[in-house]
Structures are given as structure tokens and as C-alpha cells.
Picture 1 (spheres, rainbow, N blue to C red):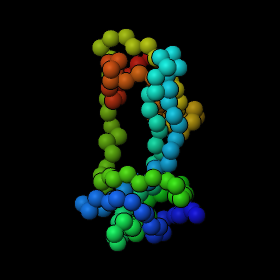
Picture 2: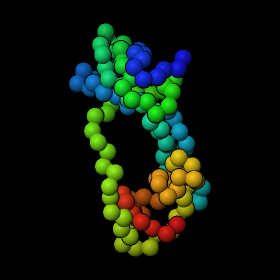
Picture 3: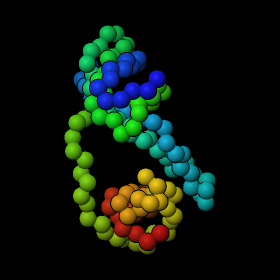
Picture 4: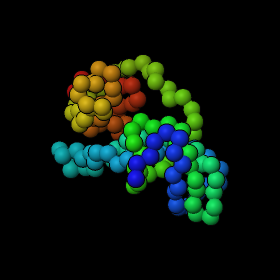
Length: 135
């Protein structure tokens, strides 16, 4: 089954009574640093958002409030809140030289100037959100 804006799919599981808005995610890439033989993380691609309309034991009725692409059976729900994402940040160089590689460009290589990239370095390497570095 495929769902779109305004549809009301059902979800089954354990639900927090205080959570009324869920992000809908699909499993994306698996990232591994081959040089270090270390799992770096898993990508969760947001495909939409839904609001809880009603609850009955372990089943909730959701209403799709926003979709980026079709919502499918097997997509996962994660608690979220309705808020604006802070999309403005000021790039700064890390305190020390960091060597790494770009693992992927979210949205594809044609979007590299307007999109985020996934790198194989992070907080433990001296990087932070908005870090501008030469890779």
C-alpha cells in the first residue's frame, strides 16, 4: 500500500500518550568507515509526518500532514515535534586539521552546493555542526 497527503493509515505498537506528532522515516544508507573498519551510522530518510487522530490500545490512527514522497508499509515512525528547523548556521574551520572523505551527498551529487554531505569524521575528530573543512 502507498499513502499520500490526507490519508489516514494505522500504526501498531507501544505509543507514548504525550506524543501526538510523528516523523515518518525510511531506512537509507548504512555508513561504514572502511579505513577504520568502524560502523559510523545508519541513514534515516524522512518521507513525511503524521498526527495522531485516535488511539485504541496498541493501534493509533494517523493523518498524514506532510509527505516528501509516497509513504509505504514498512516505513517507521519516530516521535517528533512540530517546529521549524534551524537552517542558518555559520561555517567555521575546526581547531585542528582533520582528514576525511565525503561518503555521500544527500540528494545526489548535483545538489552538493545546496545540500548536506555525510563525512567519515565527527565530534570525536573535532568537527561540529556547520564545520567547514577541506576533504
